Length: 259
Ligand code: 23J
Ligand code: MN
Image (cartoon, rainbow, N blue to C red):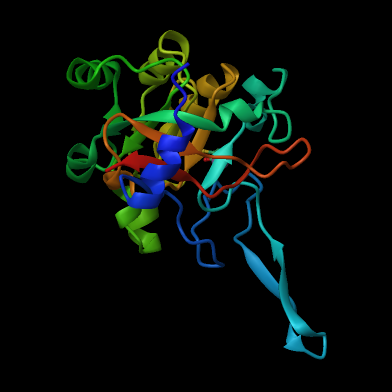
């Protein structure tokens, strides 16, 4: 076998491998998606102190959190979308743990996204990436680098006008290619959701949610630091909380990269 866990442990200790944190800070200010007003909304994080070395608990500090499952850097399970609702092992507690550690292909479309906030990843972009870096292996995360996480002000992050949010994402055809032909593990983005800002008007609406989750694939939203990853070769750890029948969860996403 080719397992060389001792070598990896040594590389991590001596700096020949590094851990990159792909997670944004989670606070009451962390942006949460705003849906059209006819739909119920997900609340931002709220934090209520239980005690902090005081009369309520003299030697201990702890808080109560209230938050939506899809807050900050988070994992979308197939059960999140109606198309994935009847699939086996589709929720945060039943996804096999072997699927929570996987290699990543990082597709850099940051320049295109800077030039056009509504940039859509199309099949030809994926095929051009593959011509340069090799075919996307089945079971890989596809991470869509847009550098959108560098838009730290809420106004720039949501980039909304009277037509709704303007943020990059994949076209329906691109999602079909990744889910059905490449058999990826899932699609990860730096924006608030895996779909483009305008994707509510696509056919089908929210194609990344509709098609990916219908195919049993996952999503990762509000990622950061994708500019620190190589196009191939990173190993991503993205394990949602084991919420029973959960549709997703905030997650600390870590990548191991060499060098
Ligand atoms: C619910 C409805 C539409 C969308 C979303 C949630 C998300 O982006 C999400 O966090 O899964 S687009
Ligand atoms: Mn989500």
